[in-house]
Every structure is written in structure tokens, then in C-alpha cells.
Image 1 (cartoon, rainbow, N blue to C red):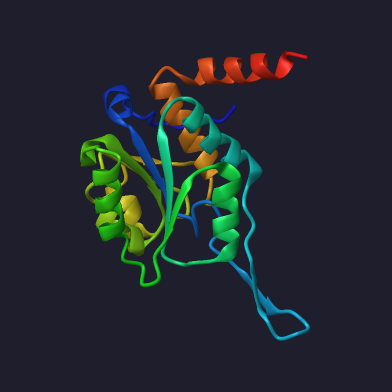
Image 2 (cartoon, one colour):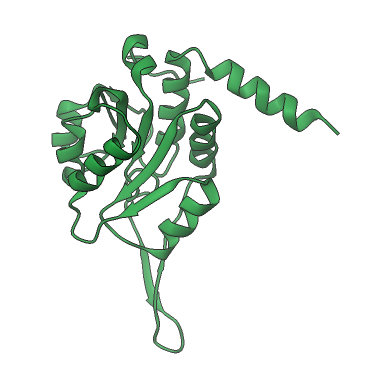
Length: 188
């Protein structure tokens, strides 16, 4: 098993109550398929990693709040968020900070109690403020420069799952979440 050379510090991990994921470049590979139907209707498709989705569900099972915040609205993102059972905020002009300020108030948390997995400069206004700054392997340099933790995998290819596992491991919850999942699904 590949392990991250710098685990998430336990003290920082245990403070986290809210986890924010960017979408494009974090939960996807930073690419989109654009086309149209035979009727000329715009069509946009995104590929999401299934293991990343399980990692997000594991955070929820561990009692953490999870929110997707994206600067590129799409129906595919809304569908994926609904499948995962998470809140999703799609910001038209990539102004994520006002949305996250509202989320912090809504969920009654402080900036130090928020973690974010990010990849690019539209995430910086939020990333600079959160208690745990995480980046995917292929994040841009400004994001990597301030990240507390960097995945060994790129966005859309397991980076989110790697982050979820690392966060739960640092909180001493990973094994319990896995065992609870296995036990619940072993019952007839």
C-alpha cells in the first residue's frame, strides 16, 4: 500500500468538523466532455472516481459534514452530489469565499474546523483560511505552496479517497468506519 510521506497531523485532523471538496480537478480529472444532442441541446459529461465517492461517504459515516463547492455549475455535479448525499454549491463566477462564509455560519464551525481539498487558484480565497489545507498531486503551484498535505494521486484518480483515508486515519476513525461498514453489510 502506498502511504503519504507526511500524514495529516492528529491535532489538526481532530478539530475538523466540515470538509469541503472542489469538484473540477479534485473529484474529476479537470476535463470535461462537451457536445450536443441530435436536437442541438448542450451536453456536458464528467467522470467521477467511485472510490473517491466511497471515501466521501466514509467521512459522513464518521460524523463529518461534507460539502462540494465548485466554480463550474453542471448537472453532472448536481447528480453526483445527490448520489453521495452531500450539499453542493455551484458558483457561477467562481466566487467561493462568500459561499463558504455562509456554510461556516450555517454549520456553526470556525475556520480552523474546516478542511478543503483543492487544486487551482479559484480555491485559494477559501484554502488560505481553512484549518487544514489539502491539495491533489496535480494542483497548481500556488495551491501546492500553501498546502498542509498533498495527495500522491491526481484529482479524479483517487486523490479524494486518499485524503479521506488520511483524515480518518489521523482522527483514529478509519478502522472503525471500515469495520462498521463491513459488519453492516455482512448481515442477512
